[in-house]
Length: 190
Image 1 (tube, helix red, strand yellow):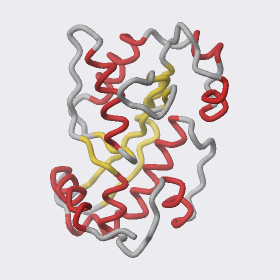
Image 2 (tube, one colour; image 1 turned 90 degrees about the vertical axis):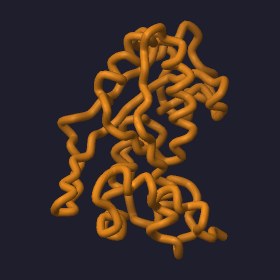
Image 3 (cartoon, one colour; image 1 turned 45 degrees about the horizontal axis):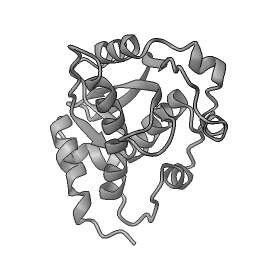
């Protein structure tokens, strides 16, 4: 997601993007499915502040010309379906998207969420990374346009691919991935 600020409880949702993953649980293989992706900028009556625009690059004109919020959220919900959602610092995305979804009459979106930060911590406890940028640097992942929703989603998929060899042997389904991520609180991080 891209937002008008860092407060998921009050800032506005500006953009949502996602890139699907194809998982072959039997063979323990994971692949990014670029053909199955989603990206939308939500229309804003009042664009975000200039400093915010400099971070995510969604200019005032693009914000004003975006898709109506209810339409964008319905399209996102249709794309997600029953699939789990994975994000780095997922509670932020979950809170921000959830708050905006609740404002759309009749719309429901309650997929399971998995925090990629937690999976990284559990699978690589020796790494002292904290931010997405730290993890990307650790694994040598490049992001074409950092703080752009679609590029960040692709970078997060790449990060999951990097930790997959340590994750796959422990998991037979997404519920197992969620359980493994929940173990993050038991990992000492310095």
